Amino acid sequence: MSRNKNLFKTFTSLAYIANVIWAVLFSILLIGCILNGEAILNAAPDSINPEGFFGSLIALFLVLSIVVVTLCVLSILGLNKMRANARKGYFLYVISNGVWALLQIYIGSDGTIFYLASGLISIVFIFYFTVQLPKFK
Image (cartoon, rainbow, N blue to C red; front, side, top):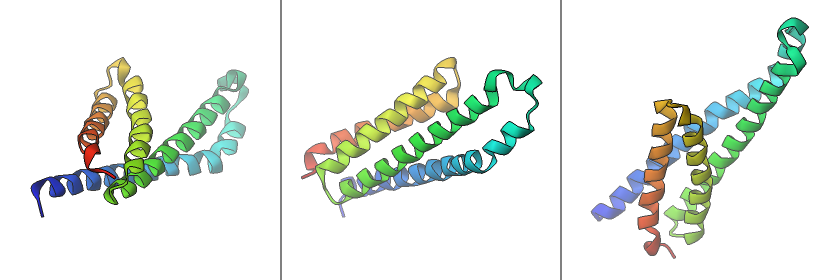
């Protein structure tokens, strides 16, 4: 097996692992929002819940969880298609992972190094798969 093929498998495996981890974490957040959201809203007295602050925060986490889990699933589907040498998989991966990278960089724009590094790592993966694009059918 050639060195490039091994590198490609390594990159796709790492991308699988990262997307599965993020999907599981945000699925847990999604389930928590669904199961505990109403209880949190009912338990918060009106004095610390001005104008539905907790309600809007839970809604934000709920929507964010759905978006991230969807992006992860689309990235995994794209990786599967790329492993099968399908060009459509590249575009699916780049669009979904590109949105993820932009989201990470936006969140990290306040100087949070973890989010900036996560976004930059995603861009490195996109760049690597872009270099591999001519090999896809």
